[in-house]
Amino acid sequence: MPYERKVIDIGAIQAQQDICSQIFDKVTADGRRPLAMVDTYGCQQNEADSEKLRGYLAMMGYGFTQDEFQADVIVVNTCAVREHAEMRVLGNVGALNHSKKARPGQIIAVCGCMVQQEHMAQKLKQSYPVVDLVFGPHELWRFPELLLQVMTKHKRVFATEKNDGVVAEGIPNKRDSGVKAWLSIMYGCNNFCSYCVVPYVRGRERSRRPEDVVAEAKELVAAGYKEITLLGQNVNSYGRDLGLDVDFSDLIRMINDIPGDFLIRFMTSHPKDATEKLFKTMAECEKCAHQLHLPVQAGNDRILKVMNRGYTSEKYLAQVALARKYMPDLVLTTDIIVGFPNESEEEFEDTIKLVEQVRYDAMFTFIYSKRVGTPAAAMPDPYTREDKQRHFDRLTEVANRISGEKHKEYEGKTLRVLVDGETGRDEYNLSSRTNGGRLVHLKGDKALIGRFVDVKITASNTWALYGEVVK
Ligand code: 5AD
Ligand code: SF4
Image 1: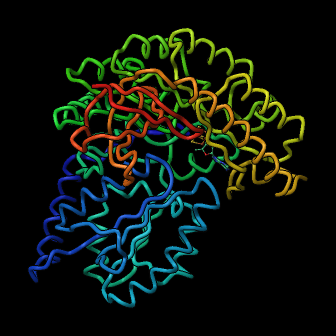
Image 2: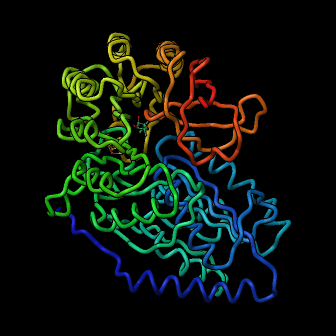
């Protein structure tokens, strides 16, 4: 069925902001500053969503805490990509019984991808009476209204109906960092990789209008942000649903044209949709980082086909070669799933071969996790958890060795990095990132945070580089 792009009217968001004022009057009436805790699981998109939840909560008058025993409102923003994250959420939500007992009146909300699955919403309804409010990703824009319902009606509220998704502009945003910002450019996914739950919980692909994205990027630059990461499940298909003749490469150029000293990063790129135009644009736009997260998922063509990825290992390797032709200094990272149903020893070996060939700067490796309702969940699988763990360990070993070797090549070089925060340690007290996104630990004055500096790399290991600021 064709998807009709559903845009939330700006007046509707204004109405939500009015509800924030109503809640403000209610919760600050006794002169005390109420506190909220927002706990986030999963990907950067969820981090970005949590910044919106905090934006609304700040408007309602809440300050923020990490201590559940201090919080008047707790929002748990969940992930559904793997079972492990869901188990952690359920364990932690269950444990909130203690804080709620200690603080009667505490409101507990659970939102995000996990609860957009029918069986999970049911589970919370039946087995977690501590939870007052449950809402899926498509209802985030009306969080104030849902929270007010809980406050005034004193009953549990569930908002997780099936939905293809919406686009909402004008939700306030309270960002975590003053240096690095997430900027969602699109939502949802149309790819239906056979193992993945995302298209079911985040709905169809829908892009924000380029003028809205550019306006937000301009605000970020004006506010002093030095790094903007454009977010989408598949940024390479940006704009397809808009019919405006603006694709992702065009969008990068528009943001690159904003005056100021800042870096543009983006994720995630689907290999089937990455184009030569994108690599050329990245190479030509001086603010665009030479960094590409290009999840390959597997190195074997039969597995790629059953995963419904839309490319072969040969096509993937050709893309990597093309990207590196345009950007010889490209930092390349990937995601890989080990133990997809019926993945044989030989098929797994193809993944090792591909990894040895590409030599990623860093890899995110996962053991396949069965997701309710996905095609892969119905595929037979004779392999045991031990087989999968063995493959996983082997792949991790190869990935770590290559990362270590790649990091070693930086030693002795001088690079421009963006200092983004403190590490909390004495010897190397600052953290920073290279243009390609590699982590560099430094020693230096806190005043360097938010600045680009030149550093000489003096040491390295698998996970990070270490350097000295060049005066
Ligand atoms: N099991 C394991 N890993 C998964 N991913 C997505 N779905 C699953 C699953 N069912 C991984 C993919 C994706 C990353 C975000 O999570 O590698 O790129
Ligand atoms: Fe999931 Fe595939 Fe969409 Fe990524 S592209 S979110 S792996 S369905």
